[in-house]
Length: 269
Image (cartoon, rainbow, N blue to C red; front, side):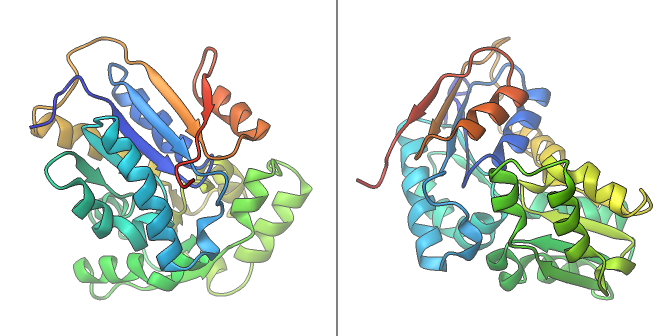
């Protein structure tokens, strides 16, 4: 059995997973965290399934070597493609969480307004993961999905809260059927960074679900159930990237107060 004092590992292709990491720290401030942003290979959404599994497996192996008691795949693309691969890698060593199942569970139980839209990367939308999982619970559900591949590089390049980002959001969401949904699932952990812009586009009349707080609560509940909550009061966080970017440091500093120690680490050399 894992040691409750060990860290939680969280990874994504870039800054998006920081939304999930921050939400976990909000509900579990006593936990230590190791975050890995694979900035050298972002975005994952236009990569092949084999490439995504390769990158995700390398990061998962690193987090397991750090004796993480849980691995959170804070990336919808990797969750849709590599979850089973990482579960197999972890075995009995660590709990593994994806960001799709908690959101689908929350939508089906607490929202269920239709039609529901799903936006995400090409790989996430092509996997059809959200529609399959929602319809397994709500067979009558009307689910409209749209790939929005420009949003991740837009966010990673810092184009948020400006005319450029508003124009791209409008281009994706103003066409049918996305302009007629009653609820919208943000199927990418980068998208919460622009969630207010998306809500504003819909005049705040559409319920927008992002994964961060939903996944954080799922992690907290499962750790508690397994007796793996850290009994300490304050955790220590470490941040790694595969390629240093000033924007990553800036966003990390927004989510995590204090001096962020950021290490560059190439796991695939």
